[in-house]
Length: 133
Image 1 (cartoon, rainbow, N blue to C red):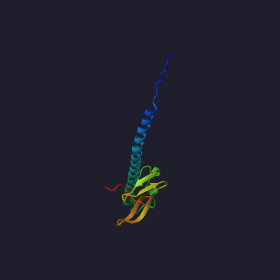
Image 2: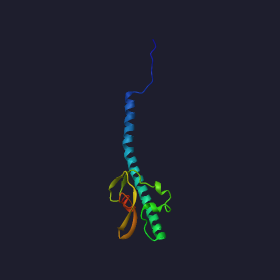
Image 3: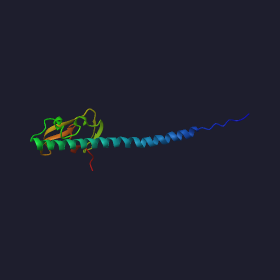
Image 4: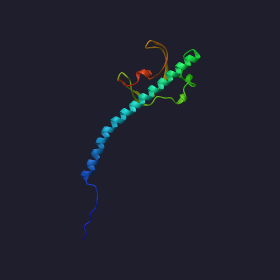
């Protein structure tokens, strides 16, 4: 009789490989989540800064504040598709907020001693988003 020798993976070898993949995933997932939060925060900051600049140009040209953000169509390209990302963002005070159905809106009044209109997201201005250095 001939003996058959089948090649294959041992149980120990498979368990070691699964353990290595598990450790790598445990390290990568939190880094990935933090990176997404950083990207969301940067997008909101950038969008709000762009809208604030468009508000300033609108005020200079027209002499008054825009009644709504929809009036900024000629100052911001593709204004209709400008929406905040869904997910978590960080404020400079360390608070983490979750944006689900948030929209960019216009807030009128005085902020930091400056009178005028500002673009806001979840009632926060561009200067409130970010990381403390």
